[in-house]
Image (cartoon, rainbow, N blue to C red; front, side):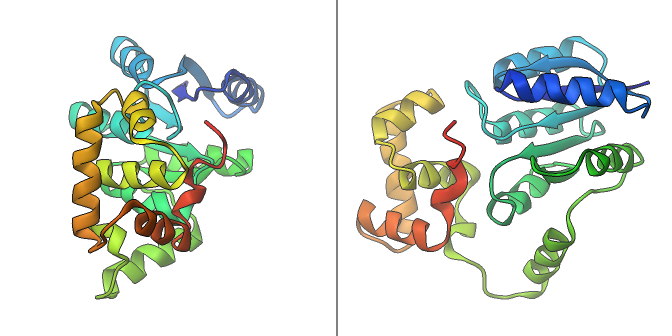
Length: 216
């Protein structure tokens, strides 16, 4: 039996995956679940787990932060990102951070099952579109400016573009307003911009404002 831990803040999503895997005769079962980042780490550390299905949009600790911690602690345990966020803007960062694959939530069940089996064999699972993007990134000398940002800076930029204030971002990330303001200054410097309005225009132009389209 392949033991799967599902991390998603929507109970309906967790229940759906649990039921579908149990009924699909794939030899897989959801043996653990979590609705936020802290709970996810506790569940995965305390019980048996063969593969993790992880959403990026979870409270307390972001999915990307959870991914990094898990990869540092359990580098051999595959983590599949199953997210509603834009693949074009997020998948490459997740793969670099240690994800074994990236799937959109609209993905068919058969593909989720295929992805789980492939990563358990030690492979990576990405869509054809993402595979092309990865090759392009390797070959291209020119990259978008936002790819120079750290993961935390990138996260703050996306949240700013979604209309959140410095105070709201600090509350969501459990960081002080001063720390978020420091990130803002770093982002401005790296993108060679002078104010928040420029950052937001850039983010919208690059499609980064869509990263929180689910309203999480």
